[in-house]
Length: 144
Image (cartoon, rainbow, N blue to C red; front, side):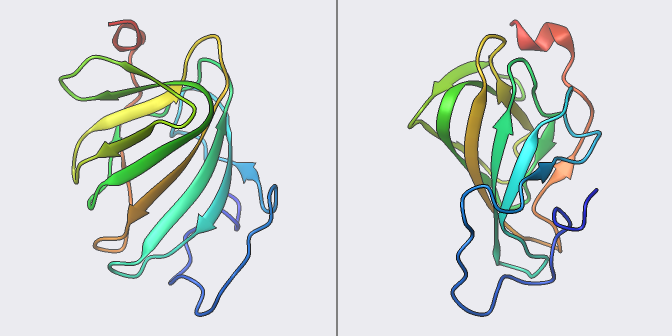
């Protein structure tokens, strides 16, 4: 994991501008079935503060199952993606769509097999974290 991707203790104390493309790094290994790029927009471990990131995912790459202790808002910037909550079917999402995952809701998201996918995600911090990573999505779960 690069230093840029590691979570900071708190959000910046004053207005901060993050320029397009600034600080884009590879996501840590072990959180998806392939590599993808992220740009951390807000980073914090402080209770109640927000974290936010922009993700750039190549076709067919999906995250592992995970949950967010205070929920997650995902806003699709470009491409075609797939999202799935545990117990549900995969749902296709496109540019301009917004997805809400409830606190603790086990889910995954990623790019459709034939399209890159980019999004901004926003998730609050609870108990020092904004995400809990789990196991990989099995191939059969992608096509249900």
